[in-house]
Length: 493
Image (cartoon, rainbow, N blue to C red):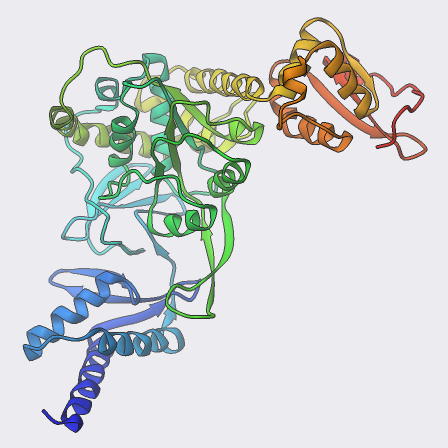
């Protein structure tokens, strides 16, 4: 074959693939300008990202069937870039979803089966449909959900997830919240337990009920990679986490409520895209994971018990897969019930995760829970997480010790630090690298732990006097609420 023949072959391959995409695919972009292609396959419609491996494989397969020749990477890349431009400039705009979508009071859940079937949930029940009115895309790692059959099997979770019965409403509520895509924040699920308590297997089983994936548990990523993981998964699940840094804790909190970040496009040198993600997260590990108050107040913490009756991994999954269809059916019943009752659900003294509490409580009729079953369990769970968070902070623990002895404080930040160091901390603690060193550090510690301190009845207030000097008050509510009496300043802040 001459050089000219090769040039014509390359040009023909590009042209043929582009013409195929224009003729057989409906090209469009989502609201972040990511290009997609809708393709009719048999009796259903498939939706693939133009830059995804799935779309590339489809183009390669079609071209080989047509010409009996392969497509090299440069030919494919050239065609994909042109198809992307066509989608961007000539296509329409449409929202694209991954696994779960919610439009008004209707929830759609992608089953990820070969028929591209979708579960449609309304306040009157649920059904499985094809060709849904919303656009779902997929990644190559996504696996199909179990077909929901059997009875209301939520109670079977206790057979496979090593939690106490009192924690069943909490886990059920978390699963239900993760199966909807409304405006509320997703509470991060923190799984703790000793070695041998089945944490990894439990997390895999929990995820498989909502968003099964070939890579079901991941190693804790960097902060920058965390957003990429969020783009390709409905649930972000991280295994054997040994330490949650302040930056990673903040990132998890942002993702639970909704995070927007600008990142470089992977297939360009200087292109930029905005990533908007709000996803459920799962973390498991032996140590305390919610060491910061903001994560403790947002998260749901479950502590697993050590497994008493062991079985092989293979047998554990055989037993779980037998019950999974019934568990999913029970969750779908809870979703439908929540949609029907959410508007009429009221909760007194809601926590920070108000939407989560409302959603789980609204589902109670499906499981015959009492009106306060969920909120009582969750309030207790959050308080326990706050206590664990306080015990993880050397400075906060010293504040708690001070107040437990009936001693309250009103004065300058450095006076408080000196008082704590003298009366409630050892020399070893005050010399540690994590100990507070400055007045600003005192304020930061009090601000960060304010919500956790309030959970155990300790309140904090800061104010400035007429000379713009900062004072703090730490004690019970009555002490902190009293008027700010003049105090002689000792240290400048």
